[in-house]
Length: 315
Image (tube, rainbow, N blue to C red; front, side, top):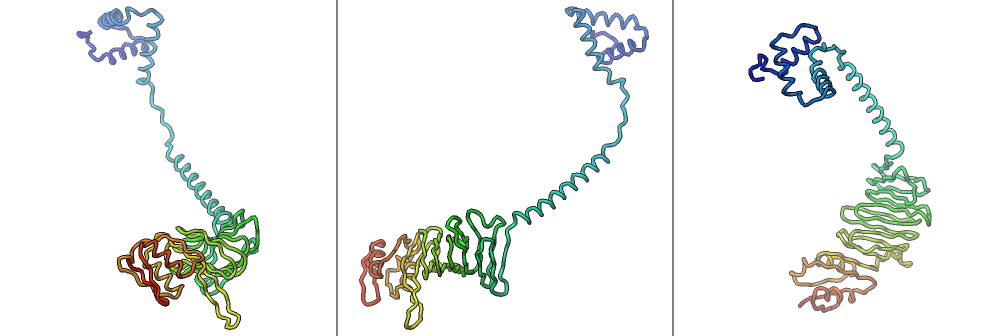
């Protein structure tokens, strides 16, 4: 077929198909070429395969004779679809916002100008001191009654043996079953003072502290530090007397440990300068000043000597 008049095979086949449809007579030259093509390409095909081959060729060429049908632009339809979709999204968004505000968004109470009392659904009463903020989930009260507190507040918690009441404050939490207590937060200083009932105070890096009435938990403004102090009122003078019951440090510098012990035991501690930055992890519970200073000296690998209220640590 190299010498055929029609070098473009597709154009030649197309022209033959066109003449077959129009009924025009095929020229002798075209008939000769077609016969050669038939001998070379279809000699091994039976009649069925030949018909199938012809149908495939004709099907492939039909698109040349199908006039394009103009269809209506789809842009207006798309426009309406986008508009409807946007409306649905807005409705769903508004519905979602309303649903969230109604059923999920926590309630927030603030005491901007002075003391404010908040009455919770379980019967508990929270007295917010100036500047405090209380956040309560819509699910309150649940199996566990939980609230979040910023600032200072006094809690009078309705008693429930089955449903603990937990106050999440800044870096620590207080768990109770029914009691009256006060939480104070001033900068790094954190404290929980118990008036009646029992509470458990959890603070990162320290053991859980359990308070009884007239006891106070505090961190003395030092991270990873926890202490329980007894606050007894003297009958004669009416003054409140503080007694250190337990003291825990977890990876705290010796200087900070010494400052806490000097303040609470009313003592003075002298020590080598190079020990100031050493990290201390210790739990002093129920010991006297003498016993706790002995333990501290042992941790540092130093000797301790006492003269009146002065403790000297040296190698």
